[in-house]
Length: 310
Image 1 (cartoon, helix red, strand yellow):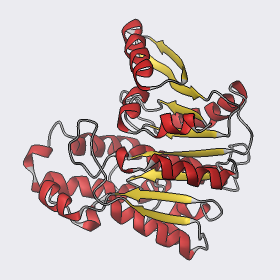
Image 2 (cartoon, rainbow, N blue to C red):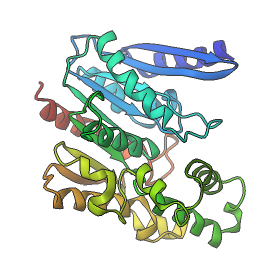
Image 3 (cartoon, helix red, strand yellow):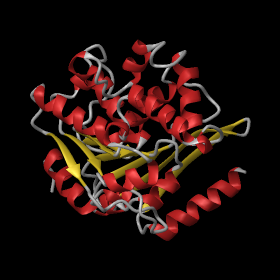
């Protein structure tokens, strides 16, 4: 299994990129223990860009967005870690802790300039990136390396809203009640948080990167001092016709509410990036929940400005 996995990985790497890619992979008892790709620029690194993949492997992320390749070509060291394991109920945020330990290791290993670090991701990974940044800027956490900026591409932020949205989807569509993303995620949440949002509201609040029922947006209040970018493709007609979804049930509701809250708290560098009509899956299918909506060239200009590099 390991040999096959690495052959596929290296094939994808060689096919997609001219840059050097360092792959670290270990397993224990047939289960992935450590997996990350590092894209290494030819010249001395401008800084570190961490691109999280949520439930997907790094090689899948590489097919969904050209951001890692373009950022590396522009001089950034790019880390794509795999942190999620479907066979584990992560009640103690173990994989968030792994990320916290991995980032300083990568900075040292690849000689990345200190204090030049941006983190982000798409979908669940965008929430993970926001949660990491919030934890880093929480005054109670002194040892976590603080990012200079954080971004999310159509991330769910309020886990109560996400849970209730999935319950609604299963209620109106019987095909989603079994063997679906909605069924999987609601089951994971109930196991991880000890019940539903109604039963365990504090657990959902503490695990959310934005929580509309909490004062100052819950954990979002820690992101008042750094640039925050949240992207979405607000194609409401697509969600109506394809998902029977209105605005209050989709990630756009969390994203816009979070940006408004951050700006009310004084963060004028918190911005919503509208990508209407730009979301497509790798096979060309129209889908507004896709990493492709992010314009890599524009993002790199923003990153250079944030990190004050050229």
